[in-house]
Length: 260
Image 1 (cartoon, rainbow, N blue to C red):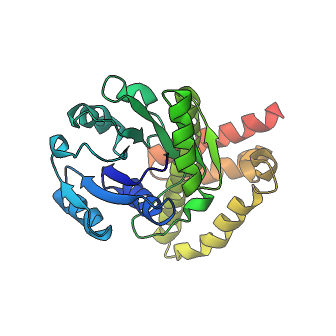
Image 2 (tube, rainbow, N blue to C red):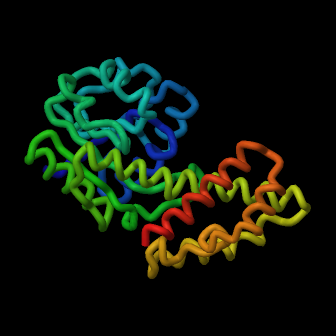
Image 3 (cartoon, rainbow, N blue to C red):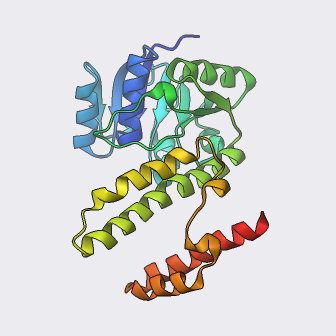
């Protein structure tokens, strides 16, 4: 079945990018946006043309083909209980929430999880975003897969359990890595050095893992267990939390080397 209309439940970063992809790549018409924040609901609805918006989950219309719940993990179950039951295909986009959060609320439900980091003012080519799908039945799984293939060139079926582990891996690969960028930027800026000088190093570090495994790409004093350098650098760090982080990661890098 080629679904035609979609309601977005949520209006954050993921919802904004996914709504655009659903319109432009999948050809769906966005008919309504729900967000508890009026400003966000209105902005996404206006961006999408003739969609209406609401801040009441109970006011979500019941005649759309697809309902995409793109909310925080904590909010998802509560909002799903408040949205009126209907015959549409209910999907959520969360990495760590089981598909069965919709059980008892919808007859047809599943997951469409895009594995990517999204920012409001940065465009993303959805064709290159791996999408992971799951459905409550084989038929629904086929429906979700068909929709996902209209968005992305890389679509995989994945269970809720395995998706949770994938999300955990993504936290390490993306969120924790970005935190390291922030710490590195703070260190150089505190010495009056422009943080942009780190960008070529960051770019090359990321580029290497397209042809090397992360273990093969690892370099630095921790890999060599160079105690003189490690002790000297640890002594330079004033913040005790950052110092502990430096020491723990250094130990972890060397421990990984010993496994190989």
